[in-house]
Length: 556
Image 1 (tube, rainbow, N blue to C red):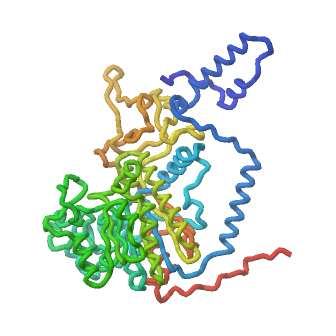
Image 2 (cartoon, rainbow, N blue to C red):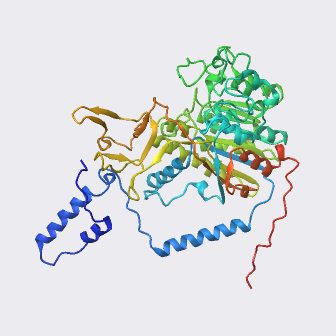
Image 3 (tube, one colour):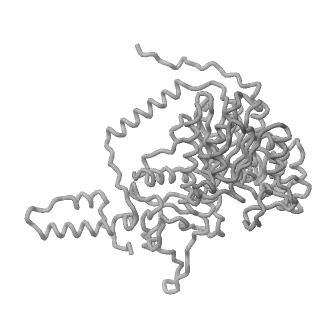
């Protein structure tokens, strides 16, 4: 299979020869050319064309690219001349968990192919058109490659942290329970800063609300896994689990909107916990009920909802606080979500409701929205599920843009870390991003465009007849199906694909978004938020300089 010897001539020369018309009336010559054309298409074209959906793109000419560049230059000049130096009344931080550059590029292509029937490469995700962007370094104090907990601590608190820790500084390492209890070692987050300025606050996620990223907004823990009392163990004895910190402590219990999964750690389900990813409560407490009683005892209107119907029926105007827990553990992947009243809301549904409720505060609000299951799909080595969740994340961003005024609302879209998925080979433009890229000239077998440097998709065996290790022929399976796991170089247990250590991107629009302009440390993001909204460590030092207009040249 795919082992025909390639013509020594380059592909353009081959195609030029194939399109040369034979002499008129020479039927044998015409037939010979047709057979040659068929042979070259089958044998020399990338295997991705064989059995894969291929979208032939336009071959844009010189003027197209010149016009595009001119438009981009105009937009760049407009950005430079019209920077927004105002104070951000509202801030929304969108976090695509695990959404590195590769995942973003793949999702961009996937979007064009799935939603618009295009080749895909020419498109954009919504945030890629934001006027300002930067690269963000993701390393931790003690690791070259980040985990979500310490990364979120950095961009929510403005202080870098150690691996697996939440809301604490350099003096606390993983499992150092007593060190994490020392208030000198704890760091405050942007959600705490916002509350001190009288703003409403909210968090929306597709993971458990006690999971690493949302927990960094309100908790202080030496281990991100201490989500409930049964997870503390001996080493965590004496520390308060993350769920209790959300329900009992500030700033957690003052968060106006809490939406995601996590009924098990919050003690709000009576079904047996058979999910190894989720911990349940042994103390018998229903923290959701306690949260409700705390609010009503103080004269507030609080609601607990557990499905899409409850979210859609929520009386926004007469609700001060809402907790929506839509899964015992994490919420479903977007590809598996049941879109009916008894099912789970989309990330866009939750985002829209959160903005409407938080907007009632005249002083503004801070909202965090996490596409958390992008990360989980990539850990499972399932690119298609990951890209569906990226597009659901994009829908949430679009929903927010349709509801806010970016003249007074700062929106930042970023990721906490990347993954080890790669886009490889030389697939033709428009080739199915989930399909086959090409074949190896070494073992004469095809390989997919998307692959992993580690993961549980490794498929090697020793062939005694050949006396060597061989890999599977991916042309014998449907590489575009949900559940397909591309080939990985290093074998890992199921779900064990790792994070990547390269920089991620941050995109911004709104007041002071131009502060994102080059490569920055990850903790810088929190300080951008603080400076833009005049809160936290920048509450009294956010005086704006007068923009220097001396560079403007007026045409006569």
